[in-house]
Length: 244
Ligand SMILES: O=C(O)CCC(=O)C(=O)O
Image (tube, rainbow, N blue to C red; front, side, top):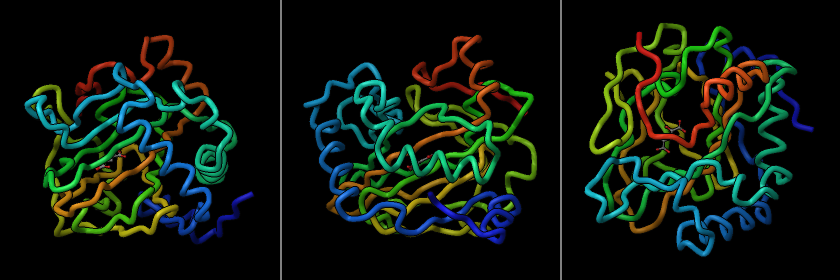
């Protein structure tokens, strides 16, 4: 059972993000690394949930996004990332918090393609209860040169900025800058939680290795029910759903 200090909880509330080192041990990271390889090389057929977040030309996949991997491999739900990140999310946001969706995001070697500045809430329908967080777990060492995450502290305390869609059905984008932000380098198996309103981005991958992350996303059970009533299960096209 993960334990968080009061300091960690208030940091998450005030700054909008929180790093948790070593959530997984080496054997656990190896399990995800092998499974991830099967997703990327199509031994697991995820074609209906797979797209290029870069909104590129369709020839070279630069930023692979595979939604809801646990629908295709349900055993994931019983594995350490899902179990531990849910426990931490409940500690951070309350006992009514549940998993909404999960996803894989990989930056392929030498693709040099940023994930634009955005707030996740812009992707979602407006919900009366705004509590929401993602847990971004590094499967590979994540550092500046391969596209680790950058966050703008306290940005979740302001409202949602105007977002536009990039490329061909690509990622959403708003104004943001590295200048007033922090970068979070992570060892494999470490993770960072961020809130639904926290402004974030990552640089492109200019290295010769993959930069793989598995992300779990959480919100109140009642808000997940509201989304499902409206047909939202995070497998549809990317679009701006919440405007300022
Ligand atoms: O992995 C990335 O580059 C972007 C991830 C992201 O935007 C997210 O997890 O909300």
